[in-house]
Length: 528
Image 1: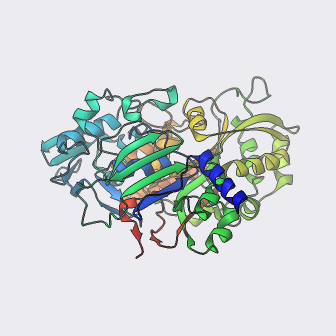
Image 2: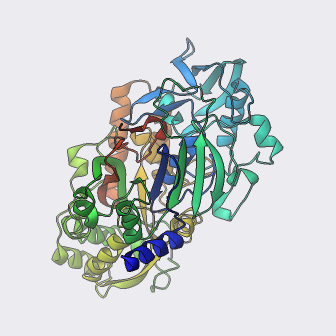
Image 3: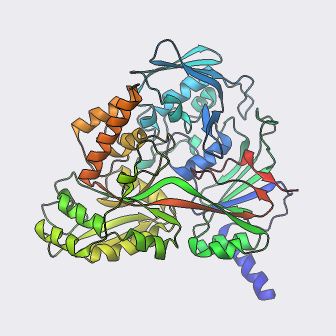
């Protein structure tokens, strides 16, 4: 008994946990990785948005079922001018410092989100102007009719314009270049929770916003929210089993039965709107991280096809993911407009055929390359990469695995310092255009910011841009199909699988899994 007590105390000390003396309305939440920043326009990343959603709000947001519902806007519709959307703002909303939220703040925030250092600018690439009509009405004018504009707004958070300027945060933090500003560590939103304290990668404490406009509309049963990132899987599970935390978002697949069968705990499961894949630098004439001088092996489509067919997705599902994944052949989950069973089909695992393609391409003896992989972002991310190392080795590609925390991994993609990398992509708009804007379009100052493949096609760029203003949905969907056909033919990405979410929590908590892995704690209920 003494030994067990000492071990639990050591775990609590090492991870920043303390045995709670808080009231029953405290919710202690853990997941593998922390939010990368509190600047709401600086990073387009799931866990960063998940924390931001507690404190900041967009005009519209997706509820726990993934449905778009009103947030700071109560009504929205296209006007008589097909290029203009009108948003009617909620009245009586105040920021955490007591200032009124008005159209000025919405105009300011959306313009801030379009600045060069913003990671959210692709979502507003079709916007020509954002203007105030009156204190509670905003018009968003696009460069052509954009029927899906509301879908693009669910993660675009509204900031207090005066507070943001006063605090020197006019420009979003440039994470890729190591930028900083005071809004990285401080917040002033309109959300259901206020920031109390923040220790990056250790602990963030929030308290319920007693002046929240949604009191009476949402359960709002959580009075205090304590968020602790715990990268180590065993430690994260031990914290849940021992009662040190109440909810973990990422139960390791090997511990699902253990958690689910423990008295007082449960596992809630749902398919996630996210695909995991590898990206390849297909555009540069020579790679920096291979052992081939003066050539780029990835520039040869036969090499890419060979690599695609030696990813044994079924083995990864069975062995690495314990059947908690859905193998796929396209970087798009089934939630997304544009998905088809044909696109989802993945190539048959065939080492002999892959070797023949490698020999035909002039790489019969293989080559060496570095694979950059995160180790705290996706479910079993490093383990997937480790499995893939052996698979690529079967055709002579000697992979050096370099696994790092996401805070170091993502800048490598954004700064183009990796030739081969793992990435996961969720689609908050539930439409293919979002994927194309970030991952397929040529990298410019407005689009293609996550296209680490260096792939570029003028023809595809034109088709991608046309999607934002095409109102004939049949024609638009036909263009989406054409773009996907080109992406699949080029094999610039190597899809692996769609993730399955497993949230572990105390039995006395009522909280469904949100398909984007974004827990909105204002919806959470405690059983009596």
